[in-house]
Amino acid sequence: MQMLSEPPPTQVDVHFHAFGFPVRIHPFFWAIALLIGLSSFKGEPLGALLSVPLILVSILAHELGHAVLQRRFGGRPYIVLHGFGGLAICGDCDRSPRSQILISLAGPIAGFLLAGVIVILLTLVSGYVAFQPAWSDQSWASQLEPELTSRLSGVWLAIGTIWYERFSSPAINDIFRILLYVNIFWGLMNLLPVYPLDGGQVAREVMTLGPDPRQGMIWSLQLSIGVAVVVALWGLFRYGPWMAILFGLLSYNNYRTLQSYTGRGPGLGWR
Image 1 (tube, helix red, strand yellow):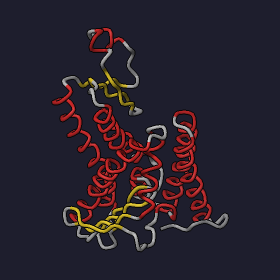
Image 2 (cartoon, rainbow, N blue to C red; image 1 turned 60 degrees about the horizontal axis):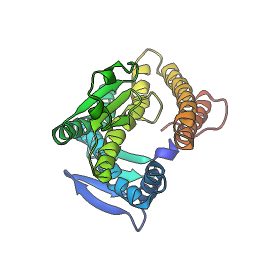
Image 3 (tube, rainbow, N blue to C red; image 1 turned 60 degrees about the vertical axis):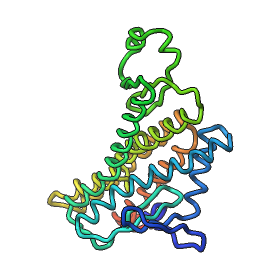
Image 4 (cartoon, helix red, strand yellow; image 1 turned 45 degrees about the horizontal axis):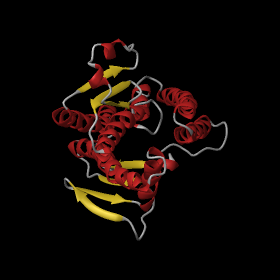
């Protein structure tokens, strides 16, 4: 899909190696990360600047998860971070469905593992960490000492909330909040069956395993469009325009691809 394809190189790209993998950072990455930071910190410049390296580390960890598996399956991958996130690009790794499914899942898993390390660190330095599932009631709070309850901060992650005893430094609280949010919430969003997100690529591989791969491809696109529309509407009311715009674009591009694939109109083609 074109909106998440590799952007062309620029003269101001940043190049380095991470664990042996070439990494290129497109300038739009910095711009979008800063905008996300400004949105998260309600326009506070210092908070927005703080969020940029945290987003960089989190997205790089995600792409390294993909790249490690791509190398495991015989490829020579490289990583590109751009305005819409990142790509682990590999033109010569194993293209079998099993390999592609594992490669797709490796990115979110890497983020969840990093989040696990952060939770362990948070437990050691905070003294209290608890997870409240989204479907639970508030009875857990009545079991805590009122003084502790007044000192808790929460990070909402769609499936629940991680509560921890907040620090006296607002910057430290923000660091943990951003790291947990990006690595867990964004990882969960990436597992949605919306192409070209990781979950959408897994759905495509699974649905094309049957006797009619073409029909499986059509089903995967239809599923992708439907889920993207639902998430766009949910995001509009829960988060505002950012998530609605992103998943609205994903839905539109998948619709165009479906038109092209079924021969019912012009589209973007299938990559």
